[in-house]
Image (cartoon, rainbow, N blue to C red; front, side, top):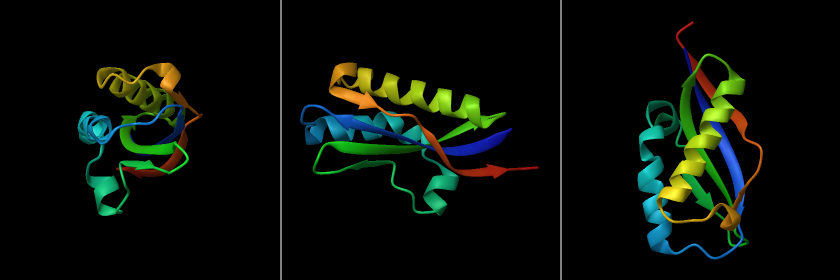
Length: 102
């Protein structure tokens, strides 16, 4: 099993409040552990133009599954905090790091 750091980019099509942002970070925080923290990777970056990037860790056998899992995790977290899919368009995820015991 490999731990992948996946970046899921997107765009908020309506403004996100500080409360929503904090709730989103809380929802995603279990996916931001040793690899990300030791490298100083920010969990959530939101730019002034509404674009954002979520960087989280996913344990998976391969890159493809890691990307799918990351997208599902981010989508679920957005729904959980009350941000509609139409208000946060996600772009294709990218592998931005990995840690393996191999």
